[in-house]
Image 1: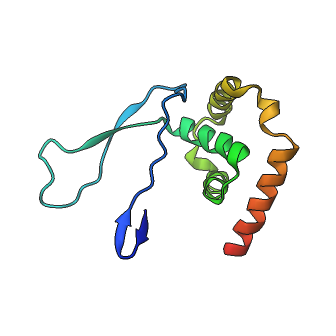
Image 2: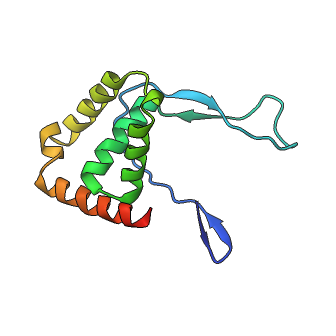
Image 3: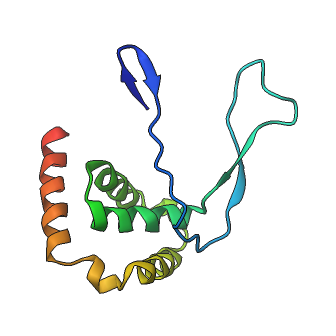
Length: 124
């Protein structure tokens, strides 16, 4: 969420050609206010392992600070990831869609990730 001259806005990245490897699931939305519907509110969500794999793929492809932040957070809180092998399997399937997993982490990607890591370190 970002603020522009006092107005809150949310940036959404939408795609129509991304593959989903794992089943989505319904997750309750926390809504502590008095106008909450009695049946509650839910949202369809990615499986957590798919989110982690997607962030790793995004980091290698576009190397933005927010992707690095998320991947570092997942690394530091490894206990959040119940099945690391499933994350790797999902990442592998997603990478096959764009070519190969080895092509994802080429020298150009390494340079972008190092550059973003330096910016990240400076901002923390």
